[in-house]
Image 1 (cartoon, rainbow, N blue to C red):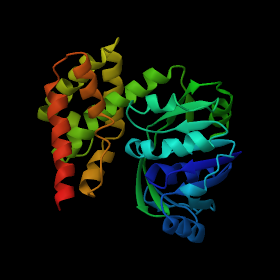
Image 2 (tube, rainbow, N blue to C red; image 1 turned 90 degrees about the vertical axis):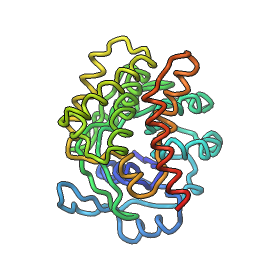
Image 3 (tube, one colour; image 1 turned 120 degrees about the vertical axis):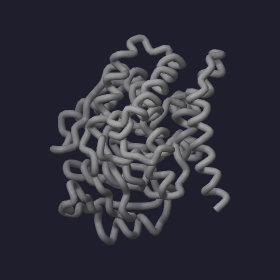
Length: 298
């Protein structure tokens, strides 16, 4: 299968590496410099501290994406998607899989004319080491679901996924994304502000109290039908990734923009539209925005 991957961040590099093991992959990066590095060195993956054999893929700037692959995977951050969506709408010819956090991007996907649109939820931990190397720190799964169209291609990917990089096909895209939204809304801002690894949120009894209260507030705003199920999923993810630093922690640490607007920002808008008081969501949103402001003033 010919697969195009838009985005040269940690997730774009991770998916390009694994999917190239059984497919013909082209990666489209923000800069020509990164594309040149990948074409020169190949893609490198570090797993469990051990560098794996490099793989060869074709790399080019995003502007050269033509939409002709059998599948396109969009692996940019949600705040980068708005600038790309017009180009995607014009060029997309085949199925597209979107891998953004949060739920705000769903309204953008409704504008696409292409018949097959999929969404995904990633449970892997990955950190970009340089322009062509990614560390695979937390082994998880990729959950996918149909937003529009048929699931045929998703079933093919699920069946043919490379060892150590499984894909699961979910029946309800909304439930899948909301589960991930809850995980991101609790773990990411708390770890970023408290400056701890994920596991400390449940192992430290004082942090765990905040963890539970923030979950309750998110559940209230989202009107979750089965709170216990969502809480158990949150606990499971936290335990599985106990030794990891969240992506928001790493973004703050490295002076990058975070996805807080797509996560707590989305919940804040929802709480206002429902006239629900959400003080913790409001306060942690402001804390992360304050950290971003520090970076901008530096």
